[in-house]
Length: 60
Image 1 (tube, rainbow, N blue to C red):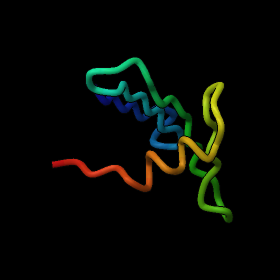
Image 2 (cartoon, rainbow, N blue to C red; image 1 turned 180 degrees about the horizontal axis):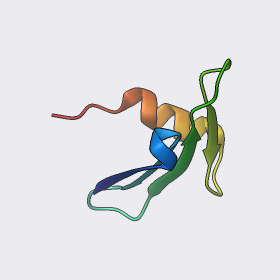
Image 3 (cartoon, helix red, strand yellow; image 1 turned 30 degrees about the vertical axis):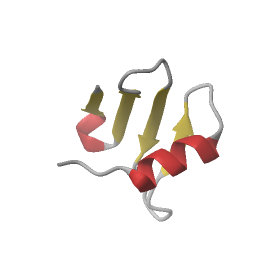
Image 4 (cartoon, helix red, strand yellow; image 1 turned 90 degrees about the vertical axis):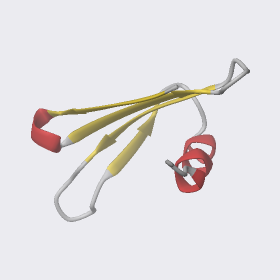
């Protein structure tokens, strides 16, 4: 399962995903900022885990 919410007029993106057939999950907030492009805030998990998931994500 994957869910995405866009809030604050597109300045905040919340992403939550659950592993199919397992109990692992990914949860993050991404803040769109002026200048730097954005700020990634994982929710109680290593940033590396979130980055690997997002970079490997393929939606069909």
